[in-house]
Length: 304
Picture 1 (tube, rainbow, N blue to C red):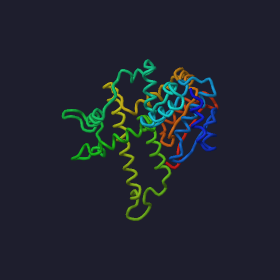
Picture 2: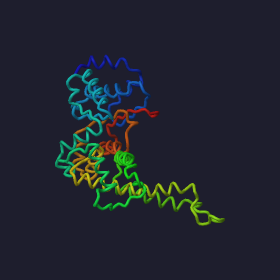
Picture 3: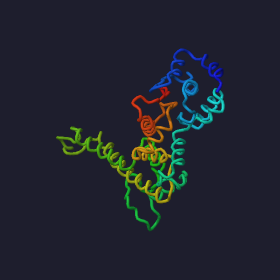
Picture 4: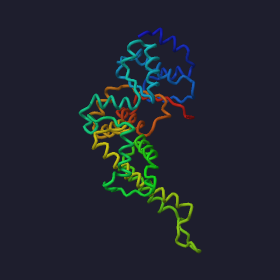
């Protein structure tokens, strides 16, 4: 590793940037706007860790959100530290989870050996759930999500909602519980829900009707989501969101695997953290949970 190369880039930093690069140990958060060199700071911090500690390159994990971000970070790191940059773990969140699944295949019996579902697979499954082929049984008896005359009208939005649930680490059972709690809270904490006098006595006020209809729609959505997950499993398929959810599920339950990963990665860094969703944040939290003062470095823009 070339210390001269590191010094060359380090000298170009302002005092605040240098402070971030020098903060090697413990939790560190860097908040800065676009164009302020956040990724460069993260990359130089990795180089500084390797310069000042005996940490091997493969004990450092850097996570970002796009493949282009991975490529850019890797390219910068190799420019600074040379071939050791190829040994540093730099992934997207999904790429890292896929790496865990492949390296610890025996820990993921539900997903290992399955194929990743294409968008065609996903649409086909949802079409069969929403409107079964002639002779099949529509066990869900959808009303709102299956409008008469256009049964697939909501298909794209349903798929989008399922993808959102997975980004937020919400499984069908969790979703049902959330919906029940929200509906119960609404009815218990809305004192003016019904008219109490006049011609409309006992009727629901108009301003609440759309919300009540949304409860029914979400209950149907939960049913579709549950059946979609069962169909994926029956066909030995998994979708993009399953990679993160499967790893989270396993790390919560499998303390040995979690400890193995915590020992493997001594330094954690996350770029563009403002884009992190609940599932990705929980992954970072689990990996960093071994120490009360973890070596966790996150970089983000609070205005984005």
